[in-house]
Image (cartoon, rainbow, N blue to C red):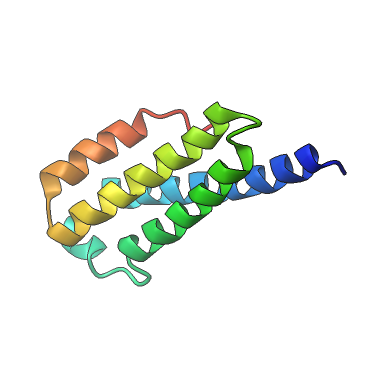
Length: 108
């Protein structure tokens, strides 16, 4: 397997995890009140942090090979970080706004 194939496959695997977790954020935010979300363990804040780290790996691996793909990983992780912040702060309006925006994304 050449360097491109190895990087692309690894980045794709991480990207799928980022999408799965973004979908989890979306579903949970749509179904539960913010007070319930604040009690999750692991917290949304911890999950968002891990996803940001994965997105950074995807970005660094793929920016020269596929900048659009690399940026999409960062975009999804940014939504999760902002949603986690809204949950921690108890900001329902902001969480609703972010949830609505995330729901319009392609998840592809």
